[in-house]
Amino acid sequence: MMSLKEVDLLSISLKQYVYKLKAYSALFYVLLLAQIIALFFSLNGISHMSSGNGELSVSVNTYSASLVIVFSFFWILFAAIQLTTKQYKKIENPLVTNSISGNLSNIGFLMTACVFGGFTSSLVGVLLRIIMYFTFDRSQIISDEFILAFSDLLLGISVTILYMVLISGMGYLTGVLTKVSMAFVIIIPAVIIGISKAYTEIFQSLIKFFTLESSLPLFALKVIITSILIFGVSILLSNRGEVSQ
Amino acid sequence: MNVIQCRDVTKSYGQNKALDHLSFEIGENKITGLIGRNGAGKTTLLKMIAGYIKPTQGELQVFTRKPFNNLDVSAKTIFIDDNMTFPDSFRLTDILSEVAPFYAAWNSNLANALFNYFSFDPNQAHSNMSKGSKSTFNSIIGIASRCPLTIFDEPTTGMDSAVRKDFYKALLKDYLEHPRTILLSSHLLSELEEILEDILLIDNGSKCLHLPVMELRELAVGIRGNKQTLLTFVEGKELIYKEEFAKGSLYVVIKKELIEQEFKHVRQNGLEVLPISLDDLCVYLTGKTGGGIDDVFKRG
Image (tube, rainbow over the protein chains, first blue to last red):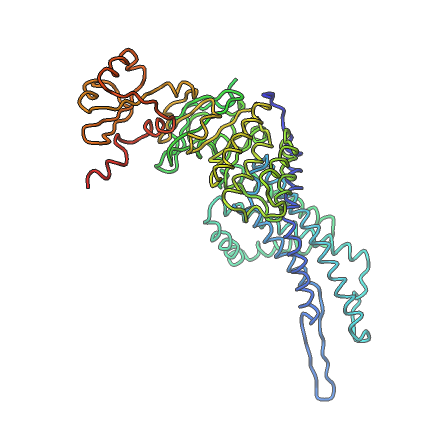
C-alpha cells in the first residue's frame, strides 16, 4: 500500500477534462441560446440604409451572421474567466488534482468549447442564409457570397475557432491574474487603454498582426504560438497559489 | 513507516499563528482522532496534510513527500468535509460514478450499498441537500474511496445520532477489512473514542498530547471531597483541573501517576475517586483557566 505508484499527470488531466466536460455542459447550452438570440437579431439585418430622390428610392438591408460570432467570442471570454474563479476551482477539490492538471483540463475544456463554438457559429451563419433563402424575395438578394462555398465555410470555421482560442487565452490569463491580485481588475483595462492611447502604432500593429493575416497556416501559427505563451504564463502564475475553500 | 511526518510546522495568517511549531508522526493504518477546541487549528492542519495549503515554516511530509500541489499525494489522499463542492449538473448518483475513476481503490458496490442504506434520492442535487445529508453523502465518498490516507474534518456535522452511529460503524467495518490511515477531527470525542486508536490533542496550534486512547484513559483521575482535606492532599502537585462545585467541596483532576501510591490514603480520608471521561479530560487539558464557565457566573 505504501508503494509510490506514480500517477500520470496526463491521465489525471484527461480524467478531469472528461469530468469538467460533463460538469460544465450547461455552458454549451448557454452558447446555443446566445447564438439563437443573435440569429434573431440578425434576421432584421445588421444595418439599414435607404436613399431616394423623389422618383426612385433605394433601400439596402445588410444581413450578416457576424453578430452570432461576436456573441460566441463574448461567450468564450466569459467561460474562460469563469473557469479561473474560486467557485469553479472548488469543483476540483474532491478529485485527484494538482495545479497543473487542473489547468491542463481547463485548457482542454476551453479548446473543446472553441471548436464547438466555431462550428456552431458558422453553421448558424448557414442557417441564416437558409432562412433568408426561403422567406425573402430571392430576386432582391444581392451577394456573391450568398451561396457559401464549402471551402469558405471550412475557412470560416477554422478562423472562428482560432480567434476563440486566442480570446479564451486572454480571458483565462485575465482570470488567473485577478486571482494573483485583485488590483489587476483595474490594472488590465488601464494598461490596455493606456497602450492604445499612448502607443497607438504599436497597438495598431499588434491588432493588425492578428487581423490582417491573409494566409490561414500563418495565422494559425501566430495564434497557436501566442496561445501557448498565454496559457503557459497562466499555468506558471497559478502554480503557486494555495487552494482556497 | 510514517504516513505523516510533521516537524516544527508553523502556519501563520498575518500576525495570527494557526499552527505553532507542531511536530508529530502518524504511522500507517492507524485511526487517529484530531481533537481540539474551536480555533485550535484542526482544519488548518488537515488541509495542510491534504495539500490544500502549505506550511509557512517547518517540514510536513505525507507519504514521504511534501503534500502541497503534489499529484502523487493527492491520488492517495482524500479530504472529506462539508465544504465539498460538486457540479450542479450532477445528480447524486452521477457524483458517485464520476468521482470513482480518480481513486484507484474505489469500491462502487460499497458506495452504492451505503447510498441505498441511507436512502438518498438518486436524482437530488448535492447543493440542495440538508447539512446532515450532505455530511452523510460526503462520508460515503470518503469510505468508498478507500484512499490510503482518508481525512475526515468534522464528518458528523449535522448528522442525527442514529446516522452518526451508523457512520462510525461503517467506517470501522470497512477499515478492519481494508486497513488504511484515517484521520478524524471531531468535537464529539465521546462517540468517537470507541473507534480511535490514537488521539492527537492540539491546543492553540500546538500539540498538547499524542497518545494511544488506552493510555489516555489511564492518564488521569478525578477526586472529589472536602475542600480542606483535598487541598492538603494535592498540595504541591500539578493539577489538570480544579473546580469548586459547592461550598466546601472541591473537585480536582490529577495525573494518576502522581497519586498512585496514595490511593488507599485518599479513600481513608473520605475522598471520592472518580473515573474521568476522555471528552472531559481533553477539555480540561486544553482549558485556558481552571474553574471553567462557572467562574463567569460566580462574580455576579
